[in-house]
Image (tube, rainbow, N blue to C red):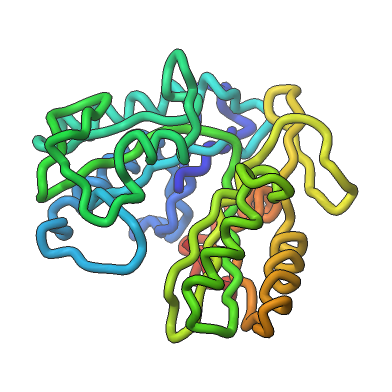
Length: 289
């Protein structure tokens, strides 16, 4: 993920990305432009990862599968992130020949379709999609070596995974369906898959932020450019999964927030910048992306 964060000494158009590295000359935190940082990482990934030799249980289409840009400060506006995301998408297809990109969120103009919808459009959820039938927004038809990369921007998306103490994928898919946003009675903003995970079933949730007031005080709120947003908390997701699993006689083994909550992410970014802490993620004990 890319975190767009304004620096007090810079204009809001000078968006920076906080890199998890230390300058070898001065031992301080390095901040470079979003585009250059991301493209450098993509070039390295594409030199190391060949999708023709890839295998794994989690759906993916690209050596670099997803590049989401999120605003963390009130002064970073949706159009700032959208512009940066589109520049990254164009830069990737230019600097790594043979890569292909689809756009989502604020970067997907003029429709601004969400990530879940765009992934459906691109056959991302299919196990063995026919790449020749996929029409990317940038670059050639996806090839087998690099596959297809999603690039876009949106309000922060939290990843919350709840593991149920069962190997029953039918049970897992039923729970995933019940809490999915598109289901009547589902949790707003939650996109979810059930995946096998270390001898159990993981209910893997992308928790999207929503415009407007929260449905309850338990839901965290934040602001982007004067617009209020909220998101379902991990406690609500865990409680619902636990209740649904218990009906079938199963328990849960735990919840992992992969990455950060929006509030936590901003707080840690501010702390790392203020104290010149490089590789800050190494100091965290919870699961991080």
